[in-house]
Length: 536
Picture (cartoon, rainbow, N blue to C red):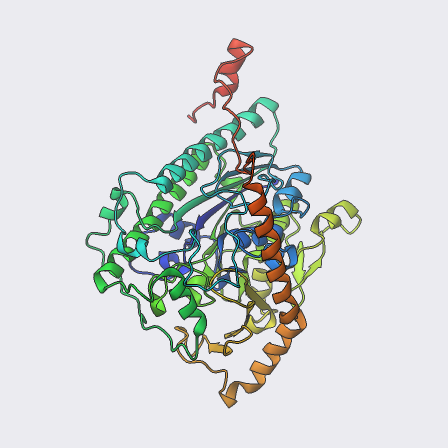
């Protein structure tokens, strides 16, 4: 096969548990389910921080948020940090971003040759947390409870306008890649990242999608009770920050919000279907890898929480589906824990056709680079600096019985609003340990307790495992030093943000270039270039 095209479809705040492919009987996700049915499904995929901007920067670089110093939604993403777009572009791919990526800072491309839309949220330093500020003194950009109370269908809103533009530009871009290769007589591979804002709150899907759930029995939260504040103060901080400590949604509010969320996921699924159809119409399906994922999940009322920012499964787990030629990925379901830092080495693996571009260290999960061609220094350099493991290699090892679920640790970080100290979580096999200075440690056995209801941190039966996992976190993090760094970063960025509001203001938001006219220059050549013949 020729070098495959790659289409990455990312939704925002789309929890794994809200897809039919992950076992939700109420979900209406036929297109994503179809990709899963004959693709590779990673059943335990985690984000590396449950917050939009740092999660996406981490995913694109294949490095942890703390490694690239992208700590929260108000932290600039350095232009000098290589992304998978830089790496694939260097390998000869055409790279394009369509839609949302929540880049903060003056670089709004980060390696993409083309970016075809602006973003939903501003690119400035507008969302800098302040760990010295009481949570009751809310900053204007905090999540708030209102979307749970106002959820329902909308004829139009900001998020629908944005995603409608994203899908239009996506389908048009696929046409353009076909046209460009047709005109050049080549098959330059492309990487297209299409990123939607739905099902992110506010929960206001189109009416057509809302109506599809009129008779669908969407389950209520399995465990809506708020955890004991003595055991889990972080959840109570999040509730205070969002206003749920003062305003508790009733069951009908909860049901309406959950219906709206499921409808928004269905809306994303419609767009996935449109992309699949266009690939088929352009005869690109057989040589294109499609990856579906999200930046984090949504608590949807479990444990009295909504949105993300929590290490609990509903917030930190994401869908991760890879569908493509059998030469690229073996179909099946994979149970070993993986994370979004694994996406960058996976894309390199696909692009380089090695099948084993990056292995992992069994103890730490750090990348062992092996670019396929031992004599290719350039290829090795392209692989440098990745913290993740190729999902293709992870799947191969799991299928061969060479790699068990406890052989590789997955780490989740959180340094943003709703906490006052760094919070780090380690997933090792079925165990999950969360450490935050000043808070009780949380240890859950996900095999025996998938709903994370029983804290095993003081259980003697888990003492050895807890000590081993804590030692691993201590080897990775100096939490006292990290806290000082985060506080210093917040102060510096707030100073810069305040200064940039004085005098002449220049925003960092991406402003797309005007569209080229349909017929310009050589009159008849424009028509010939624009035509993609229909199949007989």
